[in-house]
Image (cartoon, rainbow, N blue to C red; front, side, top):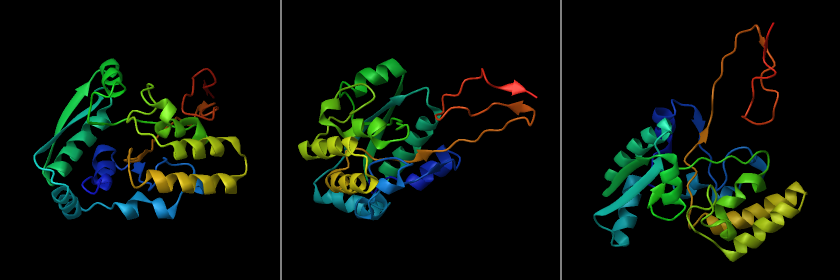
Length: 221
């Protein structure tokens, strides 16, 4: 993790349209964050530290297969940056862009070393982010691709999904993050941002709460 320059990925692969958060969840839930489990503090971009850790672990001449959906152009750009980042610490990244169906088969069949996925959580962490870490979601398409699991995290996330008090939920997430962060099963590289431009004569845009807006309500003035 110390080897990956997430700022470079946002600036070059995303054209600056992205933000970097520090925890196991993506953006949108500031109340669920934990300063003690902030990846930016725990694992800052530091190639020298990465080389030191690899040497201490006796890792040499490591090659990793990086599988991702070839239709995602930003993923390809990010992969190139990551390959350069990892080369600096002695790791060879074998970039393998494949069709979506092949990606799903390989990644969720655990036939890969690294992959890049995108997730959203639709207004609540339990909707989309829990599935990334739940043991019961291991091997399920578009859920837990790593196979990582921890019974205590399962218990904590189940409780967090069942209570409505924000302070109580935040405390539970801090407990879960304290377990997840040291193991880093998933690294949130960045949070995607988007830009849109509309003619002033258009009305009816953004009538829904998510990004899947239809065009049936859009009209010319």
